[in-house]
Length: 503
Image 1 (spheres, rainbow, N blue to C red):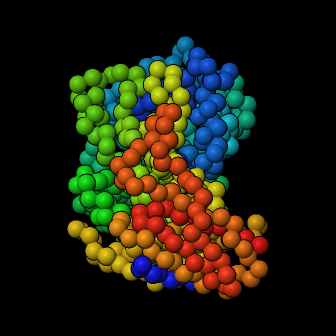
Image 2 (spheres, helix red, strand yellow):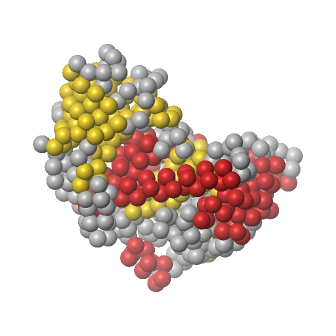
Image 3 (spheres, rainbow, N blue to C red):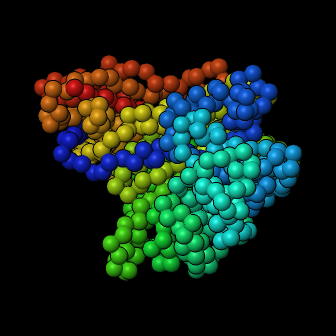
């Protein structure tokens, strides 16, 4: 059996994890809102029309922040249509996804739902078809206590207390030619700079996210980051990253190596941020908001057919990827990558949360809610990945794939929760053919014992969950033992592992 070694020591600290690393995203897209979180008349819906079963699943994931309302949708979002009496709200053509937006759920309704799931709202403003004035009006509506035009309008709409939204995105994917109101880097940089300056005059306590590149493969990456930060550096707090992966080539080994590409993406953005910091002689550090990430490729043919041939429906089934076991492994690898960069990645949003490339699904026509395969690594990371990341010293065998060299068999990171006096080791064996024995030196963890070893594994990489049949779910493993400062674990081939140690 191949062997790997690791050292875990509480003195080797990377950074405290910002809980917002385990955020998510709800866009007015497909069945995410309507027929997802909101379904009046459903037997499990509450007095506000929100599905209680969905609320409980979101709370199980313990999502600290949720980005809203887009996404591509936000670049033609008229927020005024989403507030006030329901009978007065206009129906609008959503040009991003070619659907009909009824505006039954708007800013105030979503803020109420956010409270029900114990989360925080992360709002995006429309810098595509609109601009500075509209962003300011929305901020005043949401955050100003009262005594002004838009804060008094909120109060008139029955919401006395301000929403106090702290994190705001300055547009969405403005580098993308597909984006309504697409800008050049200089156009966006100037607009974002002036919007940021003005928004912080209304509420200096807010944090702002500038649009970074839509993905690592964009032809303007990383020049986009350098140019736009040159304009906005003094006024924003984060720059965004977006990335989705797929396995169109049906090459599992190479698919699981794509988290290495994410690591390179993050490192390049950090380097670019720090270049602008040096150029400006600044003491300020820009952090990263990886506010769209996931696996997305299964449903693209259906998505194209609906948008091209069946436009202007309300809540059509768009982007409804049904995830496989191998997708869950890559999601786990991406989460480990975020943890390793906890010093700079402070916000991350799995895109998305319900029905649309999501860990939570609801069956159509009022059916049950259920957990996708990717639900579990996200839940484990959110539940046990709170605390301080410990620097991962790992010696592991490597392998090559069709497009990647020196891919580590074992990807691992550990997190120390001082409050609970626990250490959790997250590990993926991405060798799809061989089990590996992992030996961990934990002599620095005196008087600790093995609490549990959780494993997510399956013999079929393509197996999926569905309503009423959960084929992929975590189980307890008996393949770890802790003896005299040495933890020995067998990590089965192609498996997600959570090994918990505590006093």
